[in-house]
Amino acid sequence: MTHSLLVFDPGHFHAALLLSRRNSRVDRTVHLYAPPGPDVEKFIALIESFNERQEAPTDWRLDHHIGPDALAALIAERRGGIVILAGRNGPRLALMHRLHDEGFHVLADKPWLTDSGALPHLEAITTGPPLAVDIMTGRHSAFGRLRSAVLATPSVFGALGAGTERPALEFTSRHHLLKLVGGRPLQRPAWFYDVTVQGDGLVDIQSHYVDQAQWIIAPEHRLQADRDVEIISAERWTTPVPLDLFRESTGEETFPEYLRPLVEGGQLQLACNGRIDYRLCGVRVRQHCEWGLREAVGGGDIQGFTARGETAELTIDHGPDTGFRPRMRLALDDDRTIELALGQWRAEFPGLEVRADDDGYLLGLPPASEAGHEDQFPLMLDQFLDLVDAAGWPGELAARIRCRYTLLARALDFAG
Image 1 (cartoon, helix red, strand yellow):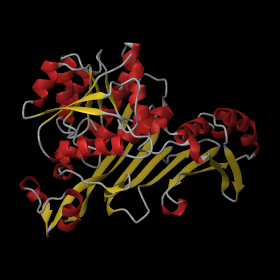
Image 2 (tube, one colour):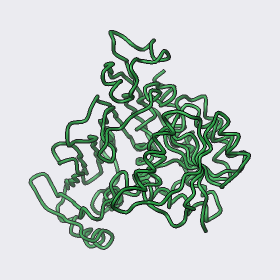
Image 3 (tube, helix red, strand yellow):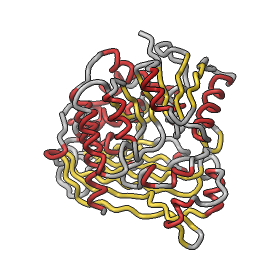
Image 4 (cartoon, helix red, strand yellow):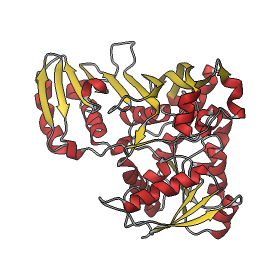
C-alpha cells in the first residue's frame, strides 16, 4: 500500500529527517501545509538537499499549500491520511486532538506537552484509532537493542536494582544549543528558546529517557501511571545564553519581546536543564539532562547510562573519551556467567565483539550494524507505516505513551 503524507507547519528538522531516505511505501508527492515564514523555508531547503545530494538522492516532490489558513486547508482537502508534526511543542496535543477527531493518523515529534494542563488531550487521542504515535528513535539502534538483551539475561545481570537504594537506571546527557546536523550548522527558530513552546529541561530530552526506561523495565507490561509511577523528586535550572550565541543559532539580531522577561545582564536564562528521580513498576530511575552552549569541533552530544543489577553493572559512555562512539562495559560479580550468554547474544547480534579488561568486559558491534541518529528517522517512519497498515491501535503502545507523558506532566507539577 502506498501512503500520501501531509506535513504540517514543520518547525523542527526532525520532520525532514523522516524523509531523508526514499521510501517505496510513500507517494513521492508530499503535501506541505504551513504558514509562511523561515520554518517552512528551512524544511523545503532540507528536502531539496536530500533530492540533490550525490549519494542516494531522494526524489520527493513537495506540493506546497502555504498560507495563514494552512490547517483548515489540510483538513478540507484531505490529500492523505497521515500527518507529520514536528515543531512547536506547546500547542501539540490540542492540535493532535483536532486531527484525531478529523480522522487523521499522526506521527509527531516529542515532547507532546510543555505543561500538565494538556493531559486531557492525551487521553482522547490514545483511547482508540486513528493512530497517534511519537517519534522515538532509540529502539532502532542496534546498540540499544544489545543493551536491552544484556539487561534481560538473568544469568548475567540478575534482578534490576536488587539490593541497593541507588537508582537501578541512570541516564545522563549534555546537548548543545549550537551544533552541526548533516555537517551543517543547525539554525534553530527563535521560539526554540521559549520553554512554553519548546518545553523545558523536564520534558524535552527526558521523554526519550522515559521511553528507554519503559522499554528496559516493562517491555510487555500495559503501564498505568496511577499504579506504576511514583515521582521522588524533580528540579530544573537554567543555562545563561549570551546574545551572540542566540544570534548565531537563530539568525535573529535581538532577543524577541516574549523572551525579554527572562533576560538578565544581557543573557537569556534558559530553563533547559532538568533532573527527575522516579520509580517505574518499583524500579528506581534517575534522568539528568543538561544543555551547553556549543559543541566542540568534531564533537557531539555527550551521553551516559548505568544499569545496576543483582550480579552485574552495565555502563555506556558516549563522549570525547570514546571518540563520540558508544562504549559498553559489563562488570560481573562472577565472570563465568558471561560464557553462558555469549552464544545467545552472538546469535542475535552477528559480529559482536567481547574483550576483557581490568574493569570488566567491553562489548562492541561492527560500525556497519549501527544506524546513526539521523538514519533512525526513516526507520521510525517505516515502523509507523507498519502500524497504519495493521489497522489497529496496539493497547500496550497506547498505554506506554499515556504513561510516558503523564509521568513528565507530574514531574513538571512536582518541580513547580
